[in-house]
Amino acid sequence: MSNIGSLLLQGIGTFIGFALLALVIVWFVQDVTQKKHTILRNFPVVGRLRYLFERQGEYFRQYFFANDREEMPFNRSVRGWIYRLAKDEGGTIGFGSTNNLSEPGNILFVNAPFPTLEVEQTPTPACIIGADYCREPFEAKSIVNISGMSFGAISAPAVRALARGARESGCWMGTGEGGLSPYHEEAGCDLVMQIGTAKYGVRDRSGALSNERLRELAPRVRAFEIKLSQGAKPGKGGVLPAAKVSEEIAAIRGIAPHVDSISPNRHHDIANADQLLDMIGRVRDITGRPVGVKTAIGGWDFMHQLCEAILRRGPEWAPDFLVIDGGEGGTGAAPQALMDHMALPITEALPRVVDALVEAGLRERVRVVASGKLVTSAKATWALCAGADFVNTARGYMFALGCIQALRCHANTCPTGITTHNRRLQRGLVVEEKYLRVANFTRNMNREIDMIAHACGLRHAREFRREHVRIVRGAYESVALSTLFPDCSPRMRGTG
Image (cartoon, rainbow, N blue to C red; front, side, top):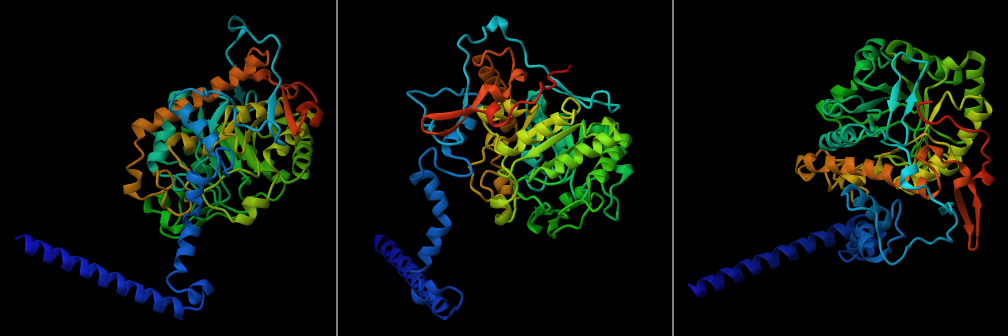
C-alpha cells in the first residue's frame, strides 16, 4: 500500500509539474506575440511579476513600508484613532504623539490656563434647521452626522448598520443621491433625502422632479438636500457601474437595471442662483421640510451671486442649510483629474462661505455643514471654529464599519462588504455588531469635541470661535485662524 501511495503522489506531482510547464509555455507565447505591453514582449513570463507587484504594491506599502503618518488618503494613525472610537476603546495613547507639530497646516487648539470645571460644563445644545421658515423644522442634536452614501454605492448591510447606528446615537443620516431605500427607513433614524442631478427616487417617468414623489417622501424624512456637486468630482455626476445596478437598486432609482448609472453633471433645471432658489422654494412648499444645498466651492462668485439673489427676494427664499464639501472629499468612483485637482479644500472654502453669509446678514438664517475628510474630533472641532454648525463624514463612518482603505470602492470587490453587492463578501459585515460601532463613533466624536471645548475654557462646543485654533506655518511659527480669516460677527448658536 505504501508503494501505491508513493506512486500516486509521484503521479500527482508529475501532473502538476507538466501543468505548470504548459501554463508557462502558454504565457510565453502570449507575451512574445502581444503588442500592447513592451515589458512583456521583451521579458516574457518574468515581466508579469512587474505588473503583479504594481497591482499589489499599495497593499504591501500600507502594512509593511509606510509609517503611521505617511499614507493617503488616511494614514494608519488616523484609521487607528477611528477604530478605537468605534470599538469604544477610548482615544488614549501612551509615551508621546507621533504627529509632527511643526508640519505646515497642522492645527493646534489654544488651551485655557484655567479649563472649564465639570460643574461649569453644559450639554452642547441642539440646532434647529429651518426655524420660522418651514412647516416642519428639524431639531438636530448631534454635531457629527453621516454624510450621504447611496444604496448602490454601499451595500444593504452597510446601509442598515449605519441607519441603526444613527438611530442609536441620535445623529442624522444622508441618503446620498441614489434615493430612499427600505434599508434607510427600517431603523427609524433621522434621514436627510438628497436630490441629485438625476433626481433618483424623486423623478417622474421623464426624469424630471416629481411633486407627487416629494409629497410621498416628505413624512419619511427630516430634510431635503439639493446636491449641486461634491468635492471629489465637481462638474461630474454620480457614477454607479453596471455591475452594481441590480434590479432592486434600479427600481429605487427609477432607471434601467444592469447598465451604468451616470448622473448629469448638473441639474437641467438649475442654471443660475435664481433657478436654485426657485427649486428650494418649490421643494420646501410641497414638503414643508427644511431644504438645503450641497456644493463644492471653486471661487467666490457662487456665494456672492447666491447671497445677492436671496437679498433681492427675501430671507424666506434662502436655503435652510448649506453643506460645503471640500475638494478632498471622497466618493465611490470619480475621474482622477477631478478628484486630485478640482475645487477648494475645506480649509479655505468653509471660512470663506461663512464670511459671505455674515457679510450678507444671512448667517443666522442659514445653517452651515462642513464636509471633506473631517474624520477626527480635532478636524471636526476645527470646522466648528471656522464657522460650521455641523460636520458630515462618510469615510469616517466607513472606517467605523470596518473599512480597511482597500481603495476598491468602484470595483464591487470591497473585502469588508461595505461597497460591494457580492453576497459572500457582504457576509462579513454583521449588522448587529457594526451598528454599535457606528453609534460609538458618533458618541465618542461628540464627546471628544466637548473635551477639546472644555480644555479651551468653553462650556460647550457651540462656543468655539476662530481664535480658539491656530494653524502651523512651519517650524517655530503658527498663526491664529482669526488672523487668517477674521471673524466678522458672532454666529447663532443652539436653539436660540
